[in-house]
Image (cartoon, rainbow, N blue to C red; front, side):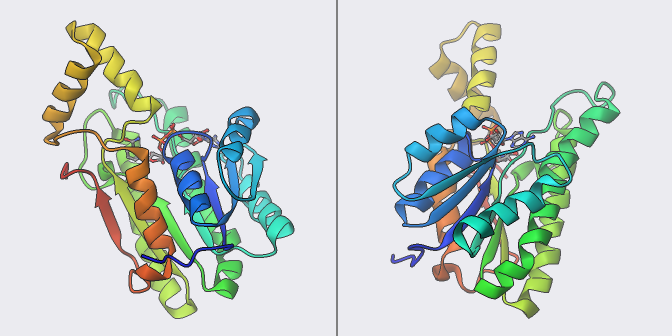
Amino acid sequence: MELQLNSKVAIITGASRGIGCAIAQTLSIEGMRLVIAARSEALLNEVAQSCNNEVFAVTMDLREPDAPQKLIDSALQKFGQIDVLVNNAGATKRGDFLELTEDDWHDGFALKFFSAVRCSRAAWPHLQASGGNIINIVGVGGRTGNAEFAIGGAVNAGLLNLTKVLADRGNKEGIRVNAINPGSIATERLQTRIQLFATEHNLSLEQAAGQMAHKLGVARFGTPDEIARAVAFLASSAAGYCQGSIFDVDGGQT
Ligand code: NAD
């Protein structure tokens, strides 16, 4: 399928590793010019070097209220246009509801929910000018609550609703807004949990991964690349009639 993304400009938040890194590499293969943001300059530079096309790395803490506007300004200064915004940065603390602190809740919302709000608001007029689109990387926890995932679930549910809100507005203003719900994707974060499970239950890593996947009702964990390919599709004109769509890419977990 010809995605016609060549030389368009995408901003990807949280692109220093995991799903964000895979999205950067995939969109770069499609010929896009990229602006990638995260906190680690060294990791961002590694990602930039692994990409085919021009990449501009912006080191910032996206929990800071003024960081999203700076990110959008940097992208415009560098490339003069924005075609795609991928709100991917996110990290929410797991744990027992009664033990999670006020700070944990504020932190989870500050990064994943509010950076998506602020990046979308700052990018909006420029996406309107380019007829561009927004893709929110959310998570199946936004659909199905889980006792261990109180903050992540609430943040994701909010972001799914924001996707619909912005899609409704985008309908009138020529901006497509869609979301992807990854299931359990084998990033470093999941590898750490597999390692812990293996140690606790005296299993090999392969056995631990198999048992964890079985408990979730899936045949295997997904790969970052499988999320990235869905992003490339949604970013492209091939998805021209996708508006407010919420794609579960979860191996059937939901
Ligand atoms: P990850 O922890 O591997 O990567 C998160 C990215 O966000 C990194 O680049 C990190 O540097 C960046 N980041 C973290 N804090 C930041 C901050 N304060 N300022 C700027 N950048 C910051 O996570 P991942 O597994 O690749 O997940 C990416 C997205 O997908 C997240 O929003 C996550 O909630 C969502 N998700 C992941 C899974 C999964 O199984 N991996 C499942 C559902 C949803």
